[in-house]
Image (cartoon, rainbow, N blue to C red; front, top):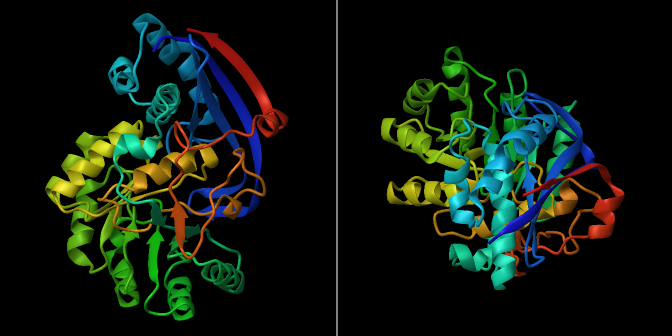
Amino acid sequence: MKFTQLELRRIHLELVTPFRTSFGEQTAREILLIGITSDDGTVGWGECVAMSEPLYSPEYVSGVETMITEFLAPRLTQRGDVIAGDVADILRPIKGHQMAKAAIEMAVLDAELRSGGINLHTRFGGTRDTIPSGVSVGIFSSIDALLSAVQGYVDDGYARIKLKIEPGWDLEPVRLVRELIGPEMGLQVDANTAYTRQDFDHLRQLDMYDLLLIEQPLDTDDLLGHRDLAAAIETPVCLDESIESLTQAEDAVAIGAAEIINIKPGRVGGYLEAVRIHDLCRTHDIPVWCGGMLETGIGRAANCALAALDGFVLPGDISASRRFYARDIVREPIEVVAGEVAVPTAPGLGYDLDAEFVESITTSLQHVSL
């Protein structure tokens, strides 16, 4: 396709409740949407999952805007005709900036599919029409508040609970939540790099709670530490922040550092790379699941199509839109019914944008000619 214009639109969405992890608390999301227009008038949208500050990853919203306008968009212009499968190679000379690249590829993919009247679920070849839905539960100010929130998610029918943990907020919350939800419901924890190699004995105490996994307990670059931890505890070790590409996934699997992998398309540079990581893990019998970055309905719809692939054997963080937002930016927000989410089937990524609402929450807008 030949694209004529790139739109960078920043929107502001308040969270229903504050969401706290080991790297900070969020009460709202500043989200960068990428719109791309083809010469036949087709518009595709991508959503950048970078946060306002470089806390989860080195990328942040303002930096992504600069990266796209000054370095990434000019490379699309130089290329001329573009297909989604070529975006990663076109942008490869620019080092890093996976979330910025993923947002562009996502927009091109959406436009390409819409132009052909195809949906992402079909493009990926997913075999399921519904997928199990898990929910991510942040760190609370009190145990009572945590248990109340978890009970609400159990009542809502979620298939799995994920608890954010950090030193000082781990063993007791996990014990009490396990008692609350019972032994049959899936429970896992996410440390977001909050622990070190000196914490192995402490983390081993989590083994008694029959967890599905412990996610990213050590630093992003500590593959050997994760390998050693996997050998030292019974709870399966899952990598998240450590995996930013297919090559890194290959290395982690080869040395035994990843018993499970959380695949986040924005973190690995796009949905097409995410599929390649899925294929690698399936070949090596490594379970995968689809993580979340507090996406709007654009990213949630695309994540559903990804999670419908056969290798995604664990419930992902694809919760109902209302888990985070009172009003989503799509006309048919994701809902959870009996622990399942229906995979969207609309052309493109699977959503219908609520353009009027998006306009009302836009805080900045710029256009780049291609």
